[in-house]
Amino acid sequence: MQTPEPMMPPRPSTDPNEGRPAPRQAVPGYWGERLAWIAGLVLAISAFTDWYAGSQADGLTLSVTGWHTGALGKLVFFAGLATLILEALREAGIELPATVPESLVLIALGSLATIFVLIRVISIPDTFFDTAGRGIGIFISLIAAIALIVAGLLRAAEEL
Image (cartoon, rainbow, N blue to C red; front, top):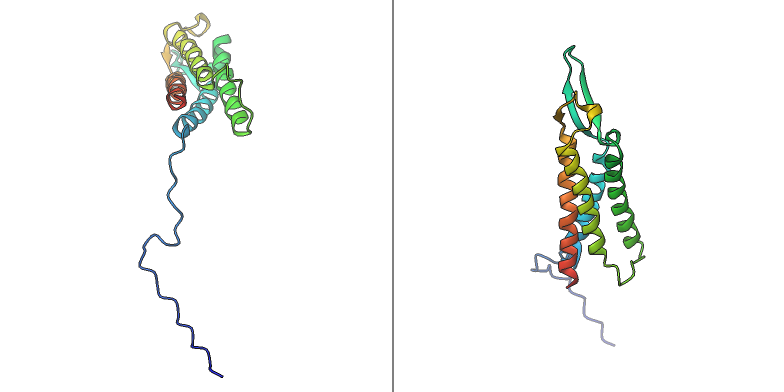
């Protein structure tokens, strides 16, 4: 009877990438999807930031949030909320009908939000005319609304 030969210890691998996970490949729709999430969240939150700010003669500083500027401020919030709901439904596997492309819905929501914010940038409501300065929140809302349009365009380009 012959004894088995002893097993040799495994040699260390010379491959530097062994044991590391493979780098993530870009998935179609990745950038448009992430931008839609971020823009929708920022758009919804920015309705509660200061859209108008200023100080009065007695030294009192006033700040008016987008929610308190009337119906347009509330519609900007709901456009952001609708975007978040649309993206959450997509993550859950619920798709819109094929006749209604999701990219078109994102572009429409972003366009509406951009128009609403631009109206508030140009025209200050009479009740807040004392606070004639525009706050940083209205410009954040404008950037988020434009980013939502860009997210819809990225989605549309990836669908083609």
